[in-house]
Image (cartoon, rainbow over all chains, first blue to last red; front, side, top):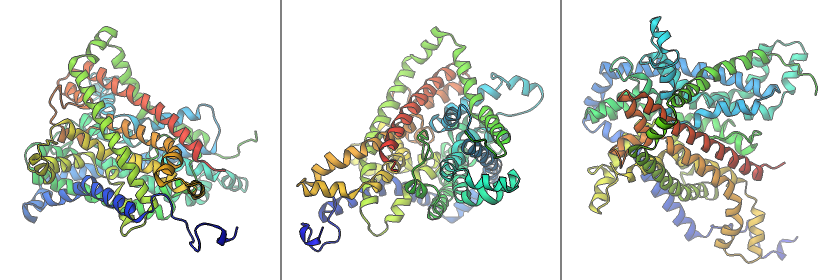
Length: 303
Length: 273
């Protein structure tokens, strides 16, 4: 059709719905104002409250042995929970996307259960496994193994809440990539590991890293599940989020916000890493390009 | 079916089943077992106690309020981020994920600081006679914060994929913007909106960390169900904790089924060959 016949003479693109300048400005304005109040303001108030009593109070809080211990415990938890979770995520994605077996959909649902379960419920559930009133609690207790109110419990609870994080990023991607490359490598004589390292891994590295970044953020910030299983022992089983709660309820507001500012900085870096990885085609960028092949993937986003 | 030549099924499936069994299935089975060991009469008495029912009410109503707010605000935000380009839109787009990245306890104390009577927003609202912190309104705001990205991120890709030809056709037939939005665009967005709404609602029902700081936690009025579970634990009333936690677990499973169905439907309408 010639351009002369269309009503939009000489215009490249006809105005789309809602492109009127007045409406456009009003909508952008409204959304930005509400967004600033709801999302930006909490971030700003953390920095404001943390430094309200000056740099000295801030550095004194961070240097406090209990705070340092909480940071250490959070880092140790992440250093154990994240790699284990990543290994699981890769194994799950490999099994689910490279093979056909019965009950695959059911397995997918099981992997995603932690997304929908309240962290408090997760904590209580662990209590009934490893607590004294739980299934294995008395046995472990008799053998002097402490799971609850100690590091193992904190790690287990963190693993529960983040179980789907890596698998969820990998499964749709590996599904869409198919099995041809791996089958070719294997038929040329490459071992399973060799195939994975030199053929699969280069194709999934950004998505893998994306999952790891999100998983790490959640592990370091987990509050509900960990607060049930940790026992909140100051200087012993307090992770950083629990330490924040403790200081806050002790009316040490500046200290609570100083500790919170560390986690807020980690959150900002997580977002920056996320955007950078999306530029490489991971996460959301891929999901818009090619829709996930699995319709049964209920939680596209972390919770 | 052709024979699968790839190695590693036993190892990868073995690791997966072991991990899912140990980390996910075992604890949930233990909780269900514990709750089931109560017996129907005791169980019913605990889960239908006045305090428990009051906690369901405040949790569900606040989650409903937060989800309705997020339905409108999330849709508007997704619309602005896909349809308009303005300075800083990339930053706004990235900031939508802040509620996912910011630990809930951090969000909780930050929102409380903002909305307490001496806070930046709380003091202004107090002059208008509106109390937010330590009321159900505070619970709602915490839920709005934590569940906002669900709706934005579910609707955004569908909006991006919307075929401009549909709007052009409607425009050439003389439809006004509002008519086209209501009769052409909205029906196409509905499956994604519903999926986002159910994700957002489910998340609000289970939220704990962001809420307990701002809620005031008064039994019968501002005590959410997740907190009641926690309180029963601190009282060493493990049976009550198990019973009430099982209610939350059941709700989560129902929401998971609803979300799965809605998301499958949403995908059916967006997948292109």
